[in-house]
Length: 192
Image (cartoon, rainbow, N blue to C red; front, top):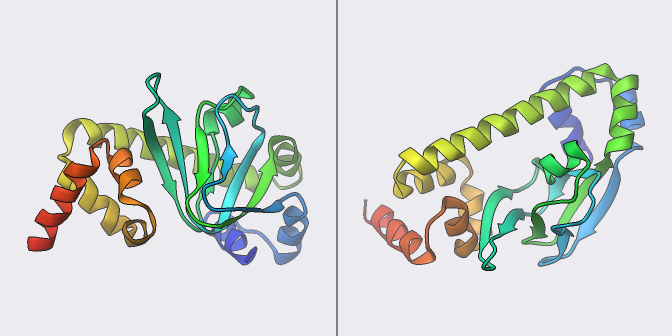
């Protein structure tokens, strides 16, 4: 399963098998049971994780207790409270496994050490962090300017597994709509 991480690295950087095996020693495998939190608001976090198997969601809780999903992630994606990780501040969000999930976690201290030993890793993570920022900006723009039906269509076209593996209530929250609105959208699309 660690081959998935190696493949992810190779998408953006050159890395020998030997170097990868050394780097892998800094990653810690964990299993997160379905409906278990990987991260809770207020926790100090120094860890980000690569998903080997499973599905997770990241969400915020509003002052009135409403969950707002801001990330849905499946295999070969990274998960973590990036703001808290980079700023060494308490987490602002929750991360929950939606399925039994296997991850490879790395802490910030080890990552900094790896950057020194393998400068190409710094490039890899810079690209990841840039892509995360771009995705966040695109999501914000879409929430303001793109109809919900089109946002749903784009989400499912980009990653059909989300529609099969993520409960509709979480997809609706991610899109910023009610579950009832999502049901109407799905019916409209089924009729097309």
